[in-house]
Image 1: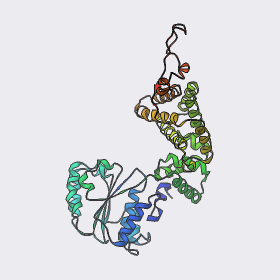
Image 2 (image 1 turned 135 degrees about the vertical axis):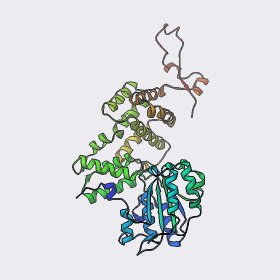
Image 3 (image 1 turned 60 degrees about the horizontal axis):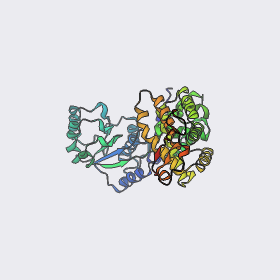
Image 4 (image 1 turned 45 degrees about the horizontal axis):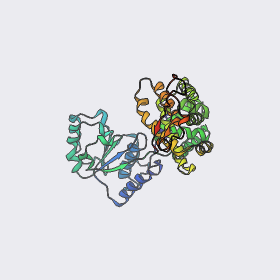
Length: 401
């Protein structure tokens, strides 16, 4: 039998199985229960959070033979055909390959007629932002005044590219990123059912690497389970995923806050030798520093999307650091994110960003300078030159946040 990847095998078939989208589920089920079905819906959000899946489930709920206008039974012929993509009245169209205005005009002509068998004809346009401007114009009139029993469901990852004329004619639902905790719980359920051996910490690593996408997290679980012959090893997960070595992040943060440029350079080279993606490492270290800033502000450590022992380690690090230092560090890392992401020499850009961050502890508050120059004796000279008595002091200044 052909192997079915976990992301497809565990694709939700009913509203209750959608992960992390309770608000959307409540709104859609209420609309079905009360018979307030709109002519057009727009589902927006990042990849892999359930937009197309929710569209299929909604189409099944509209046309289910056993549970009309409530929830899909997943057992009647109509629900089975929709799930298999074989229902003539439920059209799933990839806008990326159906973007020409001539194709959309042909679609509009075919939609002027009612459903062949089902109660509703449902048109799901995936990645709708890929349609051309002329194609959107061809759809406009039909979306605004469709024939009876016709429902449009648009799905997009780039809502800013959808014209306002289309947005104003749709009910919009934003699918949020799924939290690490919800993703880890979902991966635990799949691991138990599929007899995959994985520790809670390994699942937390996978959930964090998924970056809010259920599909990405499940695909990573599938990949690592195959790599480990049914077992997801924590160390292998950290190595293969890249950018998620929290022990390295703790050492790096300590070195930066101590102004230890040598150690920072060693750690940057270690990241490069491991073959990790510098862009991903920088993004995850930025998130790690953000967690540190929240702890410094008195935030609840239990709310952080980190393993318990790593929260304790970070808490000890934050206790010995000022809020101002963390704020300056985070501001610098955010400002350097663009250069790391766009650079052809990303590893070098990452090392330079971290080395410049290690210079931040040497800064002197301008308030201290105006108050009498306290701390100037710690400032480093610009370069070797005249004797110390004759050499002017140089210092780096900053204003308090």
